[in-house]
Every structure is written in C-alpha cells, then in structure tokens.
Image (cartoon, rainbow, N blue to C red; front, top):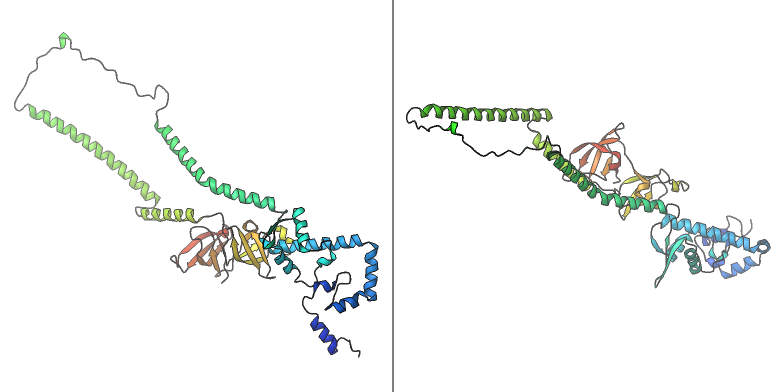
Length: 397
C-alpha cells in the first residue's frame, strides 16, 4: 500500500485538514480544487492538470469568465431572495452566508474583483436597492416577480379598511333619508292636508232666540250624558290599547317568547365583539400554516407546512418549514390555515375570540366550518358551534 492510499494515516490526516471552509485565495475555480496553504496552491498551479485547464481557458477566456459571473450572480441573488427577501441587510452578512457552502462559485473567478464592485453592479442594474453607510454597504432585494401584485394587494387592503366606516355611515344616512321621505307628505294635491276655511260667525234675525236658564233637577240628565260619553271614549281607548298589547305579545311569542330580551342582548354583545376583533390580518406566532405560493413551487415549498416564528408588519410572516427547516418570508395572502385532526389544539386567529386557544371537536365539511371549545382564559369551556376554516389554524405547543 502506498503512503497516500485511501486508508493510510497521511490520507486520513489530509481529509481532516481539508474539512470546512478554507482560504478563498487558494482555491482554483477551473480545477475546483482547494489548497490549504500558499505552497500547495503554487504546486497545483505548476501541475500538468492545471496547465491543461489553463489552455482551455486561454482559448476563450471571456466566455468562461462571463459564465462564472452569471452563475455567481444567480446563486447570490437566489440566496438573498430566500433568506432576506424583505429586509435591508448588510452586503457582508449576505456574502458570508453565501460562501459558507464550500462548493460555491468563488468571486475570484468572476469579473468583479471586490464585493463593493459587485454590490454597485447590482444597484446599477436595478436588481437590488443599495445604500452606502458609515457601517458599510447595505442592500435590499427587489422582487420583480411579485412586486406589483404585492403592492396592489397591500393598497387594496388599506383602501378597504379606510372605506368600511365611510360605507357604514353612508348606508345609515341613506336609510334616514328614506324614512324621512316616507313620513313627509307627497306633492300630490289629494294628499296635502286641506286648510280649514274660517267662516265668520253671523247670526241672522230668524235665529234669534231667548236664552233660558233652568235650575233644579234638569241638570242631572245632562251630566249623566256627559259622563256616559266620556266613559265610552275611555272604554274605546282601553280596547285599542288592549288590542295593541295583544298584537305585541303575539309578535314576541312568535319571535321566541318573552325571555328573548337577554338573548338579544347577548347577540348584540357577540356582534360588537366580532366587529371589534375582525381584522384583515390574521398571522400570529406559533401557528402552523401551508405555503400556497406558486412562485416557490420550483424550490419545493408549494403546499408545504411550516411554523410562523415571527410576524413582520402584521401581514408578513417568517415561516420555518417543517421538513427542510428553511426560513422563508411570505405574505399572508400566499398562506393558508391548517386544520388538525379531531381533538387537536387550534388557535383562533380572527373573529370575536381572536387569540384564544381551543380544542377541535368536530368539522362540518358542507358548511366549511368547525366546532371548537375554548381552553383557558375568561372564556374557558365555551363551545363555538360554527367557526370558519379561515379563522382557526393548528397551534404548535
């Protein structure tokens, strides 16, 4: 066995030394060989295999350098998009993360001599927004694929949120105007109230009669007639009041009985709680969601599940994928809630009981809703019979 065979101590020592990331300046991109020191790199450059590769390079150097430059740019931007899609990050941080892979395309084989030149190139071509600060160069990835769609979605959300109150006020004003028009008399002459004609009191000579005053028992019949007439009037009023009350009782009985006042009050409280807690954003930390972005299908993330580790600006979440453990930043429009098995723990992400943990009791596939029971908190033990799928998601304990 030779001294440099596979299982010899020297070969094993060489492999141990070669582990991990080595000096980038002692790496030969054409031969894809990493040298440990300057002497080894010098010996490699004098080797026959390296000389053959350099002959190939000398035949068309521009094409080879352009190919390495394009591959370096593509892989660098892909890493930036995947790890810091919406963040303003230092260029040195992204570069250190990129070169952690020992098989990456090295910058010394590209057309850019330094990282500063490469960052300036990205800024000139509009692929990144770059900024020079006292702490160094900072860059922000510009997502050309979904930038317009994302902005339109955010704009529509803000417009809808601003117009909700205005629409409610306009509806109330229209209802009040309609009621006022119904109560006001119409312009037809038949419906207008006729003004009473005032005729002067004239007494003709033939109507002259003497006024006689009679004292005694003759006053009693007149008083009796007055009392009888007043009694009849009061009896008619009482009968009308009884009829109205009977109709009101019948209406209450049909609607649910006399004890429905408390139920109506509770319903009003539930509606008010629903209006106050219903938001257009629902992401929260700890829930499990499914990625539905077709843009990420090429990377294998489409319809894959992950845990929300952080929420950014209410609408964007940092998702840690369950299988690959990769961390992505995805807008909530490209995510979907996950329904666990019966008996699983869920988090109510929207609606009246937003933020509460609950236990899944049953699922209604026809109406796309679920029956849950709240656990812990002030609503402990309360059962919600119909909660929409979009308002609950599986919770990771």
